[in-house]
Image (cartoon, rainbow, N blue to C red; front, side, top):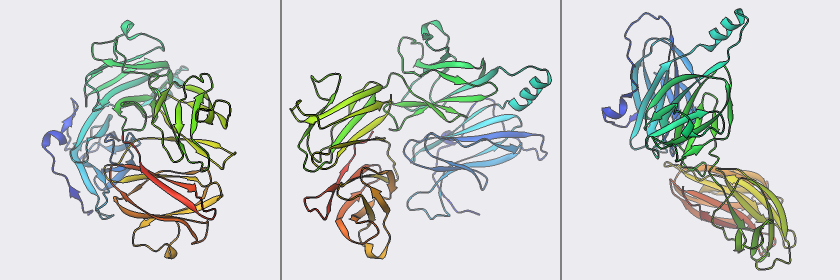
Length: 459
């Protein structure tokens, strides 16, 4: 039997159920029900969903498990997480729920709330067997032309909302909401023709105020889709996301902006101005000094033709590039290279955090070294005795956020495949719930590099 540590929860949090759910104590199996789970706590990382002692799937925030089918008997379901102080075989149990599964029903277990106060909600509806319908249609020389869509609201930042699903461009003023929902509520599936649709969310009873409007998207025939409003958690520039559970698709709000920032990592190059080439009256980034990180600015979706000049000198172009900005995304520009050879690299990032860990990203901007090795180690570790944390990191590249337990670390840079230290040790203190960046730069010492480290802003 697996050991576990349990949070003590009020019954009101453990047994929040949709109408119509009942338990079965029958020992005779008469059919199967469908089971899946959705992870809706923004900042706790990966959790596991279990039936009895069997893991049905592990998922990150906003992710859902695949559907599993089980006999119509009674089972205990639970969500577990491995916290920093847990033994590997003794994860922390967040919530549990005993449920009598009914045949031909589809159950979606929702993990919501927070690490300190997790909640479990259950959405239940009839599980449609599309394979049987397709086979029946083939037997009758016809085809299935419909699909079904259900709606769920699990976003803490939203109040009661109306959800519209109509032909693209249809005004909410000319339509009837497909669902009106508050937090934790669920609306069973409605049948619609397979077609192109646009999803719009407004405050309940207020069709003039748009909270969300998607790009047009197609929904295929003979499919069941669960449209879920869920907190964004810093992955995009929006406050909440819309996920199509079943297809794994995330819809983008066409009214959100793209956000870009910039950092100057090119030693020997003076301060920079960055312009949109269609408007040289005001720079997007003004007087960006070496080792500085700009603030974030909003731009419209589309292609930006950027021009980089010395600060206050429009007579010289140091670099030019085209950047494609997408609604809802964060992009950072990295200015790197030796004097006279300024290069610009763009990378996507996010502002999500983990309540249980720190997150650290890295970028290699030391142009005199084609590759380097990086060590992120406990302060009492001798790197002569271990291999690098990250090997052969190319100039102009790096790694996106990796997770670390909250603690003090030493960061070293060595030449590739050697123990020849060319930067460090740099001691850093990483705290849970925070994001950090470390950059490897050219040094004034031609045979060494330099490390800079800073904390990123939180969502």
